[in-house]
Length: 85
Image 1 (cartoon, rainbow, N blue to C red):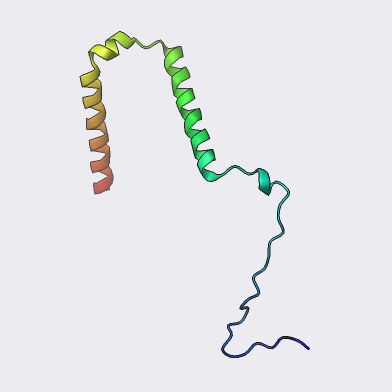
Image 2: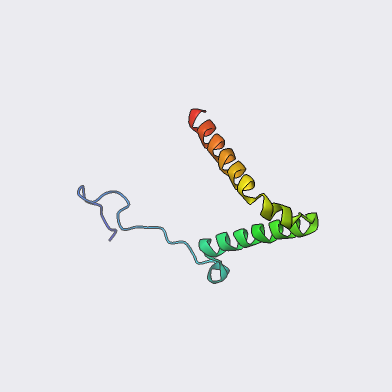
């Protein structure tokens, strides 16, 4: 005898299709681990770039205030431009 659906029971109720587990599902990295690895890679690439470019760190220390002010102005202009776009 087949199961009959009553009018009160929504069509398909209780019949969630089950997905077969994948073989690699147990070895998948979580989203947070992936994000952390990507940021680690970005910082590593930036560090290598700075090392290869041979920036004058002493000059950067002397002009730190101007560099930070320029960064703040750049971010402010970008945010205002996005707001008015």
